Image (cartoon, rainbow, N blue to C red):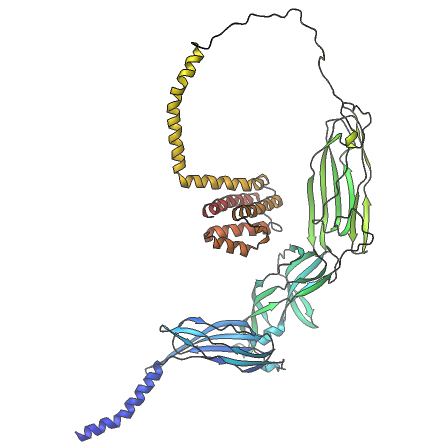
Length: 593
């Protein structure tokens, strides 16, 4: 018995060690590891959060002082060795410093088996840029040096309302490949009137960047007209680009092995200095036209008869801010009936700016015979190429009305206040007095006891059944709450979309009217000015009002179609579909707001 006790005592240390090791195997670990604790501002930092058991609700730190280039990426390792399971899960981030100094990477947390575990915070020191041999460059460094997004601005010191172009080019070194990209942040162009020039196809071309050979692709083109003087910022365009970077490894056939990474590239903020238009020599009738223009006033004919019509066209053609000023108005004699002008635009936008012509067409109908002079009118503009103002005068036009009533004033006075119209009579102005009047005796009819008396007496009795039927019908309509809502919503949709329906088939006018209808509806419904909001702000606002996601997406989709219609073709069938969608969306919104 003593020997058995002695044998148990000898096994006790082994049992204790096994118990401790088993306890250690069951212990949960969650820790943070850094690739380095001191790095240059041009280097990259890899941060890994590793745990020995799977968990949920991983919450990383905010990485203050760093920009996240990549991550989180997950790696899981699980194995069985001699009956013992080994498990490891890692969340990895690649960071780029944003400034020099000492920064603390705070705690991360995760929930494992219902308990919250936190890693220890660690301090990293960021120094000035360090020289890195090419052999020490990692994948992200290599991609940084061979991928560049550049915003090329045509002019850095334009005049107010002078066109400048911005072309965004992605330069890619021949040693790397780009497989995909997506915009992260599109510039807003505050204080500019902007016009996008769509890029139909992405064509790679050869070029140079900082003296090195690159291939580049034009991603975006836009023409800007500054709307205020002084220093204006052009916000940067940012992209997330998927890059294939070569490694030092070779495949079975000796080809270079590539590894893939995601890079964030930005065109950078550009500041232009906008010059105010000079005040010296500024004409009194200057209306804000900036460019190089021709001006004319023409009529479809100069000889016609009274009550016939002619067209007078006031036209400006050339290159400049054609969409940003009003045409001058001709002064016509009051004897000419003039209708509201029809505005026409024939404009195309290139990198040099907006080119084409705009015109106002007036329909004129003379009432009297005579000669009517159309006085000369002036148009003034500022030419940035000569840095001076120019004034163009139209020719005086004489309209000769050959046939028609004669004006009592004789020749036509150009001053409307002094022009009077003569009275033109037709038929017999006087008739003879009739000698035989052919009078007949007037009969006396009594209402009491007549047929009309009894009809009016019985009428209330006949109206009682009709009143009962009408009352029941009205109650049935009032009880149909859902039907009344639908009728009210459909009526509201027709009210706001009436202008858009009139312009179906005319793309620009239709989508402008529909976009205005959508904003006017929200303005009337929510008592706010939604035209100043972005689509994201409108979506958030509707979401706060508990509008369902499908209706919000439909509303935002219609606004996007209105913007795309500026430079994309739309058929009449597509316009009808958008009109029907808009009616449905407004009806649905009216039920929920």
